[in-house]
Image 1: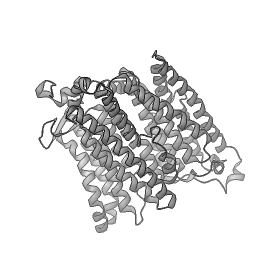
Image 2 (image 1 turned 120 degrees about the vertical axis):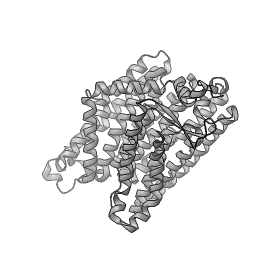
Image 3 (image 1 turned 30 degrees about the vertical axis):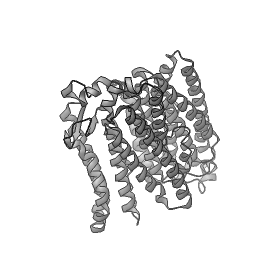
Length: 489
């Protein structure tokens, strides 16, 4: 089962070898990255089959935790790692120009670091991989080489730097209190040594620091500029994958280190502010990419609200919303590759591209939560979880969520109506066609959405099991420290 390390190591190595391979043989170089990702998927399948679907911990280099580096592999981690490989293949930059080697190398670096984020079992490596994700993101965002892209990258760089400092401050506070960075060891020490104001301050610092990439209020001002100027594939990767991995870090910390209600309430408040600010800004937006960017902020706010719910119901609802967003939002961004710019340009565009209009309507209906699409079931879980709480703050969150859904339906349906507003003769020479590859990728994501609808019952059961195991703190500790009976001190 040690082969799981290859899923991180091979893309990292390939990122540096790819320019050399391309200089030797361009055809081979173009498929070098996808071949590495395909091998990663096969490796994941083999590892999970060997483990029998059971969680396990792997000590890297033979140094036993809490001193050494360890990867923790459970259904939640495997779910995200598989998503990294699949989305890497789906959004691979095949376009050939002089920047191709750099784009593909940065994509491999981003995917390797994202995989490391999902598997890491200690705060030090989480921070290292978090920084690698940031470095790769900066390069991919600036790949369009326009003044607007450079300005957006610079803003993202500044905010990400602030987030890195805050994350490092939070990790330092935790280490000063406990003397360890291993998550399983911290899970044992947290009830006594982190259940205090200093521990809460550490959580807030990490939450806001990591929240830069998770599009969390108030450190998400980079989102509209970056998503409006970056290539659609980069926007899709950032919104559909990187933001969810940042949320995964926060959820691991909330479950293992900070199960106290004060930490969940901070997440709940920031999530509500994200929903309000994101959805209202999306409603006012006059540019498709900016509208989708603000909408993404609102959706991430809903995910934070879900994960703030106590017990396993919050994990279950949060995972359902996360996976749904990973399918829908990238599909919408891929449609915006040529549909970007003023919304006025899209009047009647549905007659020029009926497939693009149909995909947009499908994704929009699911995003709003129209039954029986998967988005309805995911939002129903959140509504049920919020309604089952007695605290006034959760009732306020329910009101915010329902109001935001109305606002979301308003601007998405308004745009969907505009797609069919004029006759074909009037728009044939003015409405843009979506990019052909964008249509293909969006169609594949739509197929995944429909498949999820057909298999909603087994998917729901599987997600419930994943959420249950992710919330089992004693099981996490036991897998990392089996020889000590779960005692890591």
